[in-house]
Length: 154
Image 1 (tube, rainbow, N blue to C red):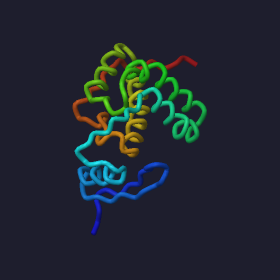
Image 2: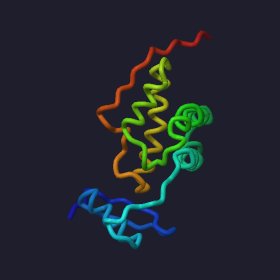
Image 3: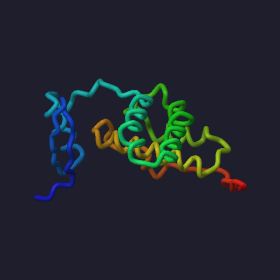
């Protein structure tokens, strides 16, 4: 049988493989392995700033050049943390993300795409960790507008 979902997850420090035919079945298996029932809702929340910094320290910084690492950290500190400082990773919606891009105002479109790239990596990691069922950044409703970036004079 070919499974649509085949992921690993860390539960109480142990890596477990979960195979499922749907997100619902995957969720039920995760909840069962954690000792709960699928109708119970997880109460633990993961504050965005802490999760984003953990992602940066574990996955972002070690795997890119120092210049890219500086850019990633800048996007987190300057745009993402201020926008989501009171939210947990589980609470971020597509509307929150659109509000972030709208609030960036006259920033260059390239800057907004850099923010989108970093946020996308953080949310993808959260999805793989089983914290969110769907990445809100992948919505077709999102629109990124901005001015063209200006070339730096050498």
